[in-house]
Length: 429
Image 1 (cartoon, rainbow, N blue to C red):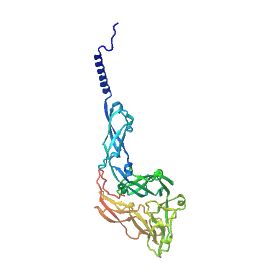
Image 2: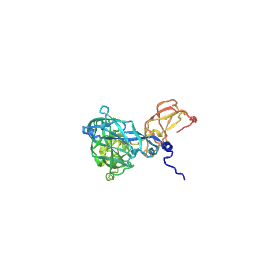
Image 3: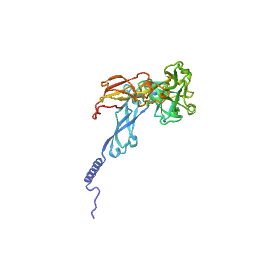
Image 4: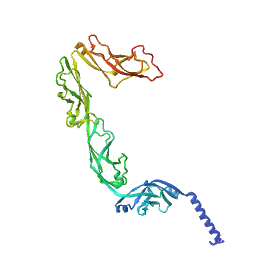
């Protein structure tokens, strides 16, 4: 049997081996080519920043501290690299002192030697150095959310009361106020809430605290919140003195008739009404109703206060009637409008009233009901304008109006509609 030597046709075999290796390289690169991928929002770490601190200064990053990184590697490697694998570093020791630019170096330690290149876009980050600034601010409290219905936020005590902020001098100087922000949504009892520190400039813009430091430590900020219960209580007025001969006192009313107060449960349980002493409202010798303004905050018991935003101003009215008379305050909105032209509409002051004084026997006056008996006749008012129109009252026998009464009404053109109403040939309400 003929034997073949390894060296037989050696040049041809070498050529064949080289060709095979070349062919394998081509196939490998076609199947797993070098490609690129861009990774966004890679945080740039500032290295050796103690160099600036040693000089008694601080720095501010002028650019976005997040960059994009472009990586070139074989497809199989690219598919494995994640954003968290990429490290972007700006070494202050390499800073250009004239421009403040620091070159950004990128590495992927987990895949060291497995990628061709990695570079950031942009390639530099810029910082500004300046003297260190420090200031002490008194903390105020702001709230978000809404407490439970029937409750009101009372006193809020922040701990600590003051905070020291340190950082770039220009940034510290721009701080106008330091706020402890808490969420009181659904709160209905006294609580200690953890607060978020928010810094504002003079224009009300929030200041980024990324390059500022404070002395809060791990305890942070807390706010002791007092919560009070809300209660509605009536106002009670009495009058002192005696009206003139031939007149009588019919009692007191007030506007408003009740107010909302707040306080702790034990304080609110002791109050059923707010009573104004009779000595505060004299009707001596009166021949007509007497009105007097009060500030009821002077009469609130200890531990009770008006709810937030409520006014303590109240007007009390002592009703004085001539014997044989009866006065009724009648809402203008309840007056019937008879014979209103179809092209006009009526308007008047909100909550407007007319005062009607009737004379007659006491029993008849006491039972007098005019709820559906007051009207105005608009038959002769056919043009736009503001008019003082006589008020008509349908009264029972034995009762009369002591004097004529008018009401001021404004008539304006009504916007036309597709469905026009028929002409008013009869009384309308």
